[in-house]
Image 1 (cartoon, rainbow, N blue to C red):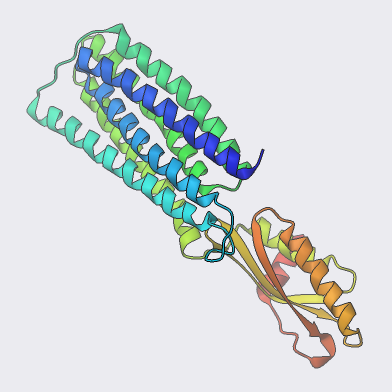
Image 2 (image 1 turned 180 degrees about the horizontal axis):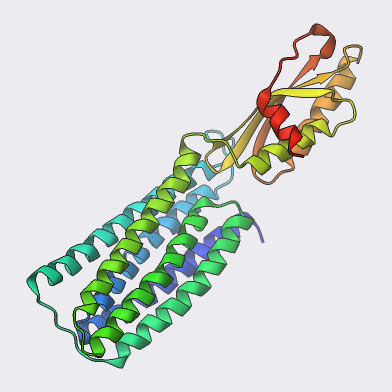
Length: 304
């Protein structure tokens, strides 16, 4: 299945599940008055809203390259993820306001109903399934938007559990447990938003990829039998993909055709990494003395 089909299918699935959950939680909230269930309903409403953004964003990011975007549209994905974060922060703020207001005013009304327990258990189980599915698809397809969605679903499991504790406490005769659980849910929601922002800032500011990937890039360059060394190795994110540039040193008596073949082979090897979009290789004759000490290259080479 292509990346385009996978991302769109996952986005539509997440949208459908969140819509079902917001309707179920909303119905239980109206019938019970539970703030914990209300907070979960607001959380699912925010999930549904940003799921629409994700579906639209993933549609754009999976469009094929064109004249104006020769590298494709994948670089839109970090911006989609920031929309996800904005929706998460909004939901967390609303829930925190409602719960704080109830605690300060003492206006706590909880109806005892097993339906509240049932909908929260169902939500936790469903969100666990979505978390595993989205995380696997996001990692397999190198999609920061789906990884962000997976993290939101993971934290939704914890917030549903907190809400469940609050409902159970209220049913056991401790009404204050309900708004306290809503506060815990709100904190969990906001924390998810912070995680999503932290992950995607790296993509937007052109941060370096993980060390193991940088080491693998260097290894692939040095694995060519006619490459004597490498320096000025730079790898950085451009959207969710990585651009690589480096210098390699070869014997100076090679023909231009031979040097070109070495360069092409190194480029192909590096671009075979699924995370890498483009690799740019400069060939240096080692006799020119352009070699320079590169502490980062030496450190990564020593780790192999």
